[in-house]
Image 1 (cartoon, each protein chain N blue to C red):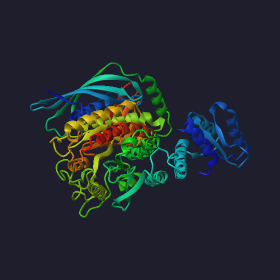
Image 2: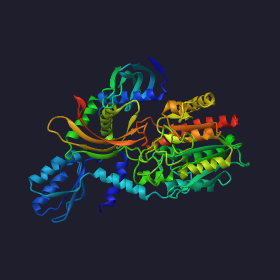
Image 3: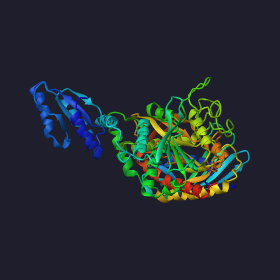
Image 4: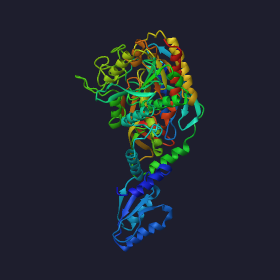
Length: 420
Length: 211
């Protein structure tokens, strides 16, 4: 469409209040003085609210008219009655504007220059998030470092941010987001958490006190192959993108691939299933890299894996009905964390063990970490409860991250005060 | 009859069935019902019949969140039945906000469209729903409410993930007809599956799924 200037002006208007749904742009090329007169008549009819993009100028010269939806019948009748032929240049102005706007956003996606100009209220691509990480490290070299703990099936780097004020191998908290790629509010929240940690430290409030004695590890894009796939091909993709020999379908559920009750009831042995556990435990590099990291670090004291949706705070086990020895304490910490979360915006959460609260699930992350001795192992299911589900509107990212952070702080503070 | 914790998954699943049924019964282009809270749940195992859940729900109208309305529901999953839908009875206590004006406006708008309405991906990947498509989104809740009610078991928990495609089909009678392809997410199996469903709607007569 070669009408960029006019379209841009409309976009500016459209983003404010007006909608152009159902509006059409008609083109008339008057071939006689009678036809020209008929078109000029239309200009006098103010109640039609016509918008002449190209005004009548002379014979053989095109006249382009944006016709609001309620006036379409009248205008077409006027032209047809006089035998004036016209063509429909734009069938639905709004549809075109929407496409233009998307295009504008795509092309204006210049990378932000610093983490203060980064837009936390929008969903981002992998490149934008990886760029954010580099900016954060560059801005805070004494607090933040970036570790590569492995590579995904499609050879994407698996990055973990380390927040530390010093010491050697301090007791640590681990947080991961985005292990299931379609749960977009989690990666977006992870980005917000990273900035929040830095801010708290700079202002000597919030988690600054935790950082005096503990380190925080944050893996934001835990399943980058899946995440890329949700952006290019299938927004509802959950699993990794591995293809194992003999498997009919692609991908393994990274939350069924851990070595805790692996392969037992609560996971599928079919590669086409969304809960396929994979050919063997830790077959997925996304999982194996975390396992290796946790084992070699040896001093992780709290482990939180973040998912969406359902608004739940869960503790182990998922693979068995047997209660964990620390059930009572984990239940109490959960109650406190959920109360803190609710205090901000009134968001209601339920809590309990995985198997009683959501379903039986084997080979899950926090069942493994708990069995490794990481007592404070929790899983969150963030907003919402199904109204938007995985497609949570971007304006809910920051409120979700803010309230979740309050719960995370309860868990981190309890860990710090009850080190083992 | 045993008391269930509202946090127990079986209570949540029964509540999802009741919600689907309620959306089908009482939803429309100007009204979308959501579950504010599951207040209590009880379960009864009836020999040779099935499992019956007694629920106390607090519902909200997503377009009028200041208000809530109480509701009791009974959901009976029939024993061993793979083909029949759960039996649902509901009693809504109190009034829901009237949508007469919004319904009539929507009806007129769609009836006067020259071209049949077509849309896809509601919401889009970022959760956006254009305002003029919100009524269509809410009608998709009505349609998917029916599908969810009809296809639920104690081992499923369905939510509408997205409206993949919707096409209006003009009719000779006074009903509006929308052919939907909806994606339903089953929380238990984690599958997201497409379903085709045709919905007929009229401002006074309400909605029904066309077989």
